[in-house]
Length: 360
Image (tube, rainbow, N blue to C red; front, side, top):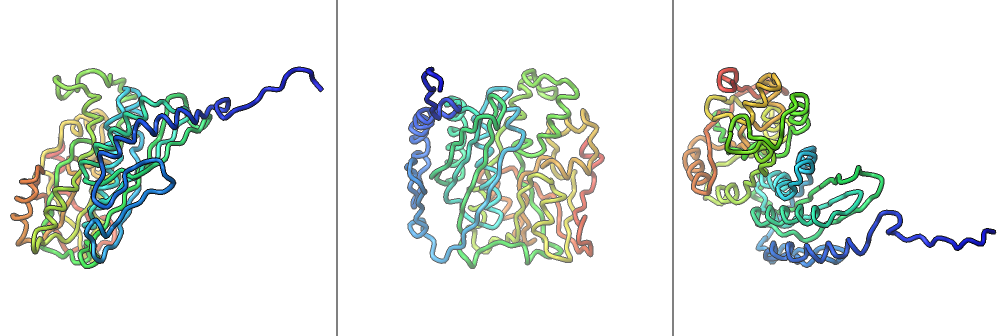
């Protein structure tokens, strides 16, 4: 046997610093506490998080859950060293999925994985998550930070979010009563949101676009800031509309990956489709620029991006004006973008008129 002293291995030798992880949790505890709501226990550090659904005021609740991520938008955030907005995105992508069934988001959990924990970056991400939770009126009650050396390139990380909400059993929105003659409202997006960024990055890379320079369509703003604009959170305005007596809302669709063509059909019953008119809302400049630079055809735009509409609501015709006014009063920019029509197609039941002229 060798007379050389044996090396004593530690977890830190393998690239995992438990003490740094503990300090990180201590740093983010106050951020989580600021998101506390009635029924929540936002004190981080336990094994499982607790939420009292009765204290939140529900009588016969059904839980609604959603999970999502931010996709390759993270690569742009990482390249620019701006991490707070993707935390907001993470919450938005989950809670916006929950409200389409009329549910109120109750609590949120996050998962951050990386090869080496950078406390500054991770704290910035959680700051964004906490902002998103406050905007959605839900509590950040727990999460997980995983340091996994060798699995990620240096400086890279990934995010996943998990949201749970509730709705009274007799109030669930399913879309099954949507019928020809119902009207379609579109709530504007804040930009690209968090979908389609693989295509965005491909176009930017192939055309050698400078992310840190002025946006080609707005000399007063960096292109980076336009791309990283956080996903709009529609929770409070939509739930306010649903609180209106006899609201007439029959279905809601979150326009995420897949755009209009993939997401709107998810709430439509058999025998109906939607006819939209692209001239009824403005296509934001970021999408006009991407379309021209990437020579993207209209169908591809409509199945990849939100094209300026982040949430769609299908409403009984007689309640259209009232609900539009309620949403506008709560900060939404709302357009009457189409109507529900009879359709015998099981697929391709979304028609968008005037795209060639409106989406120049």
